[in-house]
Length: 226
Image (cartoon, rainbow, N blue to C red):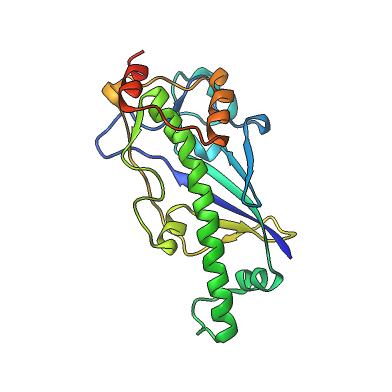
């Protein structure tokens, strides 16, 4: 068996014409190792986390500047999943060449690869939607649709989410499917969304790792107006 890491970069960008957008933090951004949200589900270790590329403010050039900004915008969110795969599947993933026709053995491995992709994608979007939903329900930021609901074509989704896997013994992130760009629009109710503060993060973490139901619409509105 081989152990692989698969990383999805979920875009979190504005609708056209909107100025106030994206999940926003204030004077802080969850870049620390202690800020990583960790859980395990269905035998897969899942990390929900951020790197510097996730920051959407052009004016923030380095980590030291983050504390000076009232609104630190989130351009993307990362989900990294660690899973065990067969040695034959791992070798196929490393050597995969879409230009070559598939023989019977390769067809079997391609089916196994597709099942792995479906499983990891489903686990990733289940948890990546949790911080988005937290911001939506408790801080007034409303995305037009959750990740995963807009397209059922797995190859297109792997492109959209810049899906990559880390080769064993290497620091090279190889393509987990074809690549292309993509975005999901996010808007705020009444332009009065609340920022997520550092002291909120433990509550966000608890919400993400749980399966707690969301409040109903009236409760959401009452919270967003507070």
